[in-house]
Length: 439
Ligand code: ATP
Image 1: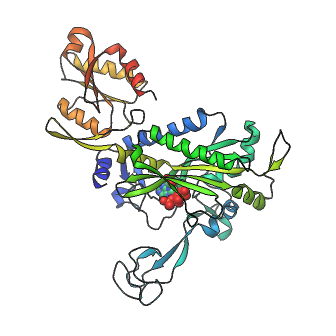
Image 2: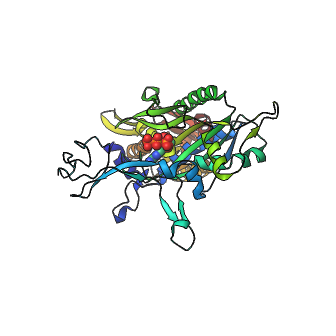
Image 3: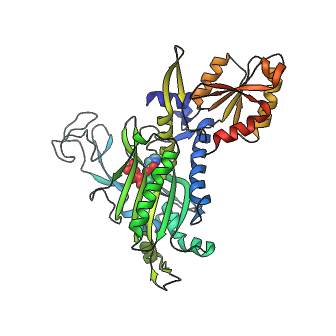
């Protein structure tokens, strides 16, 4: 993990937020390569959900919502973690922190940081939602929350989307966007952060068909993740036990990835029943029933949710792609990212900066950059330039040499993973890349 964090910073994937001020706890910024990688993940998700399916519509709801939304959803009352404080060293922990010996609040309990006994307070509930104020006055009536999940924006727009899109049940609404949680024990790089992006899809179905749709989406999501190039042996389902299930959920599976710090959830598929729409109907006083045009039945749809984190998915991809290899007696670090997800698709190198090579290389670069995110590099030995691109995960290295200029206009294309080089005609490069990047 340390190596990956250092590569992420060195190569411009991820930086600590406000680093020159010492950083802000568990908030991260995506640099030039990171923003491309994460954008590619999000675009692929959007394409597979919204563009490739007729039965899912897109939505972009605001982060700020009416405060009643969070009462209806249960977040005001229940989105909490139990916390204990050490009265001696002032550190704060989750009550279930495995390092705490004894029962917090009792004289036998020992602080895991300073070692004092009997200084831990009894657990108190702490709400994970960020609060802020709307309008010019800072008073209770003006409190609004930064959304802790994107799903509620979908539920409150369910009727708007249904009516404007003329969809019929079963259908879904997909949304991508920021969510905020004041996590108590954040950490593990971008795995658990206080500001993150979710990719959520809520699928509205007739009660009774929810089990089938749940199975469908569970398998569909796993297929999609394997399609991103994640190694299948690093992926598994974890079905929630009775104790883990949210009170409103009928069934739930996490999809876990084996991160360097262990197996952890990065996506969840939940059968949320009619809980959310029923609650919003109750709290808003607006009917959210569906009238089946065929049977004339009225019902509140059940919801099957697929909820993924764009940041955790991106982190899983980085962990999965990171390799250290020995090539011809030399060590190389390479990110074997799926070519369609790689931030840069190709790098263009004039072998030397003379004999017409830079001019031809520039022409090729200008021709390709309208269609692909490509990079021009003419500094350092060719070996060093290849290694820099290996670390960035760039799938193809295009070198313009003497033969390109003086003989036949072909260039060499080096494959990041196989290290094979082949000569391709300059004018065929765009087609060659398009073919390789398809899928
Ligand atoms: P965890 O148990 O890890 O806190 P959760 O069960 O609360 O996660 P959900 O509420 O189901 O997570 O959120 C759906 C997805 O959103 C998660 O699978 C994860 O990818 C992402 N996510 C949730 N919380 C965070 C966070 N603090 N930082 C980054 N991503 C997050």
